[in-house]
Image (cartoon, rainbow, N blue to C red; front, side):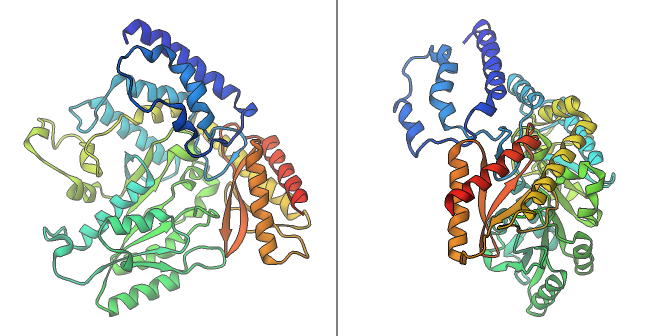
Length: 470
């Protein structure tokens, strides 16, 4: 492909992306493709000769689009918001076009320094103090793994013997509502699943601090070494918040690392009225939240903050001769701040997005989504036979069809049937889940273009599906 063909196809591709997104509302939200259907559309062998790029857009339309579930659709209410604004798309295009490898300051100074600036902008947007320093990672799962590795090494005194050194086994603590990435990180970091303590939750599904303190004391008495607590600010299922301030009082007393997972809910803190939900955050050692969720930056872009980056550098840093530069010691080399060596220029899409939307625009969109969630919860609570199953802290609404006269198995079957009917219709997409053993319908509001009318249409669809299953 030469520059002229690149220009022509590039303009056509941007037009196609814009047209596709502008017509999303008329398209099915969830892909109806069956297993193997997309693979069957593609040749089994790679092309022997090139020159097929001219058909790329037609191929996208015919072979790829039928297998796409549209996370940017205004009627997407499943999982979590995962938006990609137009400005963010342009940032990703610039990233690809520049082809930057940002592992060190010298390999592209702008990649490092722009990231330092936009991460400090994010810090200010969510109300964190200047004590925090941030670095972009791919996902919260990777950041949580990095945090647990740092906790492990600090607890071991950065010993060259690592986990093979003397002393008792190290233990990690998290609530029963913590994300599955905590379990995975515990195993990957070498603690072992047997040394992850799952702490009971209270009626609000937040970690019980008394149970945490009791578990730590029990482990100490058994000769084990408490190492890290992962607190959740906005659980996946119900957006519950662990009491960070009270947890910090325990971790500070026992010398345990406190990591906070605010993957989706961190965006809410751009609105000052939401910050009471993570009261005590300044007492944590590390924090992760994902601008590639509710904030609107395209995947992947995870914001990892640490109160002392030297913990990262001591654990992740490498210094082979071929990576040394004359500026080392004067600049940040972000390869030493996380597991990966290579780095994409992710700060570009974050920068583009913040320049385009601004703090006021982000706050307005968050407040719109919060208002829509409260409206839906009010409608459900006022309708006989329906229940709101958890407090609506932010934009997630957990509801259930529970008419009188149906036993528990029948209610579960009815709710699954409602979810399947709504999702199969193509008009909306939500996530069925379980809460305290009960089948629920989980509605996550936060797509860039979701307005009240889309939420109202979902509520109508839920009631119609319930009627059809009764």
